[in-house]
Amino acid sequence: MTTTSTPTTFAPAFAAHSKDNPTRTAPPKCTYTYQSGFGNEFATEAPGWEGALPVKQNTPQVCPYGLYAEQLSGSAFTAPRGHNLRSWLYRVRPSVCHTPFQRASYDSAHMVRQFADTECEPTPNQLRWSPLDLPEAGKVPFHAGWHTICGAGGPETKSGLAVHMFTASADMVNTAMVNADGEILIVPQHGALDIKTEFGKLYVAPNEIVVIPRGVRFAVSLPDGPTRGYILEVYTGRFELPDLGPIGANGLANPRDFVYPTAWFETSEQPIEFTLVNKYANLLWTAKMDHSPFNVVAWHGNYAPYKYDLAAFNAMNTVTFDHPDPSIFTVLTCKSNTPGVAIADFVIFPPRWATGEGTFRPPYFHRNTMSEFMGLIKGAYEAKAEGFVPGGGSLHSIMTPHGPDAPTFQKASTAPLTPVRVADGTMAFMFESSLLMTVSKWALVESNKVQQDYWTHWQGLKSHLNKDNKEGKKELLKF
Ligand SMILES: O=C(O)Cc1cc(O)ccc1O
Ligand SMILES: [Fe+2]
Image 1 (cartoon, rainbow, N blue to C red):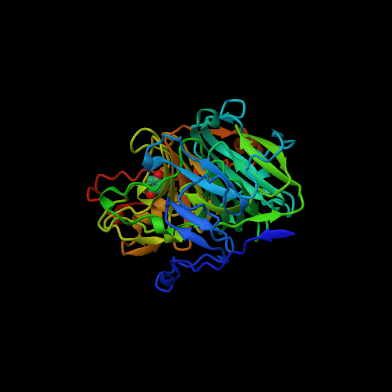
Image 2: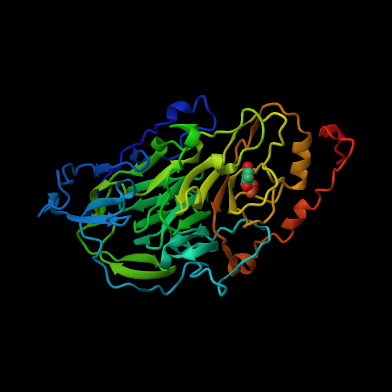
């Protein structure tokens, strides 16, 4: 006999706004119950199992309903209170009930073990990739479909990051994945992800993101069939909301729009065959279990997976002049030890109004001490007329020059400067890092997805030097 707890319907907190704001519609098929608030101390019991959380203590001699108490620590025990992360899980069997891990007989499609010159290469060139092909239906489960694009550092020293693209076409059946190496932020681009976790279920559609903290077991099913997306993995620390500085107490990604699962579990009286896939030291290991690891009847704490709808982002921008730096669009950041310098920022370019007066409105030409990996969920990115397509990617590494392509420069230099909607129907994003990311040889060569002509898209930017155009008049530009 199988026991499962049933989720109830979730009414999205932001549904009321969607009538007036076309960018803010409820995600589809959102049927799970969630709790909201970034980094809150949550407490949840599966429906029908009220009282499963012990009262006033974490480790009673015998837990309610005969459950096992288990702590999952996401920070050192001694981390300062504001950074201390842990949850208490009350489960049918403790997570230690599994056979010893063995190196998996397969690896994830093209996952990089080390960002060393055997598997990766540095390059100062502008890089752009066409989208990865979707695998044939039923062939590739999520845990086997990671393709590392670039990264720096590694899990051994808990420092740095990796950027992966994933493709998947099969449900993870009686299989769970856990990443001991770091926290992952998943950006589905094509097809939704229905995710079981030890903490409950999350349904994540394109234009939403999900963060799975280090050590949390999860399994991905694909309700829309073959899927594709991006993964930002941080070996250092974890994702936090950025400080808002002079913006004030509200704006950008608001804490209440981050939602966390409610307790849900599955258990069976008869033993089952279950496989646990552990990404440990950027290698895959497997162990067997005779039960589902999704057996947490109740949990409380502040260390749990969560999701966020990018349409809920409250963008800030100029209402006078000039193009601000893209840090105004930071959704989440993983800080380094240097104040203001990120291991990784997750930044989006959402639909919004452009109002800048006397301003060249698209992204400016620039060279940056940070590395910029970009992806596109849907639509067309404002700095690129063609070639950067949904599911594709680009990398502009440390001090690699880039900016609008020649057609975009021409259009934006001559456009009337009325207030206009930009990026309608679009969601581009950036994984920005202070580190120099080397690029996997698979991404550079074997994938066959690098657009060899990318550099040529800027070569039409000819000189407009004109002694008679001291005032910078668009009419005097000769295209
Ligand atoms: O390179 C890019 O397209 C990303 C980007 C956008 C922007 O508005 C300003 C700077 C920047 O790097
Ligand atoms: Fe840039």
